[in-house]
Image: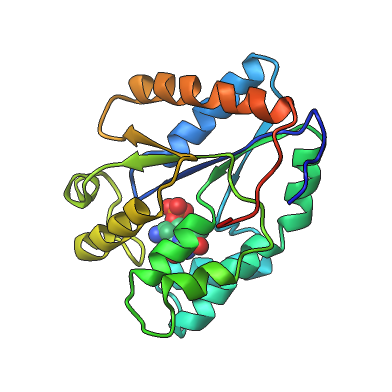
Length: 215
Ligand code: NYM
């Protein structure tokens, strides 16, 4: 993907298992960025507000069941329907902080171990989307997240499955990923996140090109 100019926003993504504290950290990061004069906003994937997102929500709440390939496609479509808006915001200088993205998409589906839904196949469906400038991997054991409040309310919140998801996140890491110890305190994590994010925001502002997923 080509550079979108000298003032583009950064694409910052939080990833990790369920109940690892991503949403709290996304909110705190956006507040901090804004307080430092950085134009920033937070999105979550799945975006449960769209028609596709509502179908995903029903599936996650176990109010409906779906073929694994179909639900995977819905998660992908839920990102693709936001692609244009995402690119426009970034090009206009807004830093986007995402609570999950395509990395969750491929990790959760590949963790199911369905032969025709391999990691490579899942990746291939999203190559038209921008890559994150930075993925903050909130790392924690599956057992530790299971002890947190609300765990088990949604599909996928099972220790064995989460362990597989975490293994796949580990295999996806490259030099754009930073690992954060999610078992630390909210404030300690936040300070580590801010220190990691600021140089990335500066690089994007300075014209570092936006990448394409999996390149
Ligand atoms: N999830 C999320 C997927 O299976 N595929 C995806 O592409 C995305 C973005 O949905 N268990 C799963 C991961 C989580 C759930 O939960 C969303 P939350 O608490 O809203 O992040």
